[in-house]
Image (cartoon, rainbow, N blue to C red; front, side, top):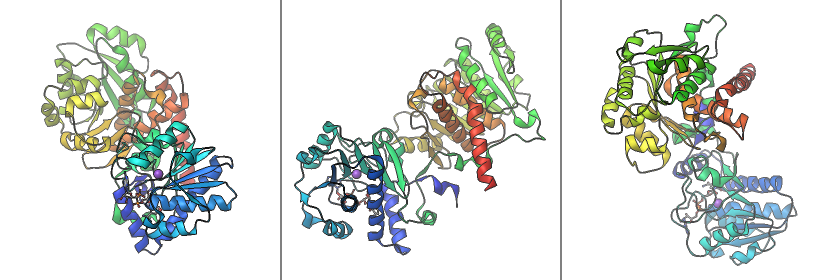
Length: 498
Ligand SMILES: NC(=O)C1=CN([C@@H]2O[C@H](COP(=O)(O)OP(=O)(O)OC[C@H]3O[C@@H](n4cnc5c(N)ncnc54)[C@H](O)[C@@H]3O)[C@@H](O)[C@H]2O)[C@@H](O)CC1
Ligand SMILES: [K+]
């Protein structure tokens, strides 16, 4: 199977096409709904002790899943109360079918349903939500929130746009657990949706992955399966020069940033790492680094002179650099080599007055790693969700663009995109971006292609932060990379041995 199919993300419109393709291939829509509702009932019984469950059903197929789940839970002996938004007579198709089969009582829709409940199943709206919630639906969502009851959401928490991860109005359900079907949607991994879904479970409802061949996908959730086949594990007959040489251009006042970047490049396996340090602060870098080499860069010697050594095959500019003319010149010198170049932080900000001059200079493999503020400085206020904005920026700049955050998006100029979902909150700490730029460069130096190297680096970065947990500071990250790599290596080897 195409690896991209495994972690494919499908926006609601594409998911509807996948449903239709599965139905065309022979599975009935009733079977799909039955499987979906059963998965919800199983999730509820697995995650909560038997108690008074309230199932809130909407007027469409999301509600239909709710009827199936309610009947199943009832048969398992759960005390079930069910509220339907709208008239039962207005239900259509599969939802009407399963409403008829529900043996319990359909109650008047209102907040009184929540009294004495222990858990709520949110089957109000799913993929079909097309506008802000109003009237009784909005009041109910507000009541569920106020009740602080645990919630299991069907497909997506009501109010959340599955395509963008944004609310369509001013209120939405915050779920503890979300059961979705076949594949996740971008809205499950893009913020703030990722935070509203709780744990996301993907249930197999009988749709074959092969439908994706025709239907396509909107992006992938970042995972090793996407790039582990091309991960540059060192070879026994290898040489340090086979593992590349990273050059990190160091800054004058914030020397820690380039050092973090250099250590990360080394830990992720670059054969050699050099920091080009401005002459006045050379001793600071030299005293702090051991295996990483430090080259004193005088004003008179341009970066291009150093780069005459063609073994330096991946370059980082930006961490702690200062948004100065000197940084601009360093960026242009790096890009002129057409070697793999990571531009972070001040290397991005330095081009804020004239972004087009940067885009013109990008002719070879280049990775831009802005956070939201730096992104806006370079690309302005691009409308749309983060996935769309990253894709637009990659297309405009010709670089792989990483928009950092809890839901880091990596997009390539050819349209490929991943959304990363393993970053814990602990990663929001000073210097973690410097580490990321070094990880990317370290993988580029070992010959990984830009989009794969960046996806892998973002994932390793998130894993390292998870491994440490609370109290994490950026210095910890490079030292955590070896254990993360070991676990990855062992899991990949086991998979290969199967
Ligand atoms: N299509 C299929 O074959 C499957 C669909 N499944 C379920 O079906 C759901 C999608 O079903 P639907 O397309 O019927 O959509 P929903 O059930 O999410 O929404 C129902 C209808 O409500 C209306 N609506 C949208 N926003 C509204 C608002 N703010 N206020 C009032 N009315 C609003 C729309 O006309 C929409 O068609 C999925 O989320 C999933 O739970 C599952 O049963 C698996 C199989
Ligand atoms: K829902």
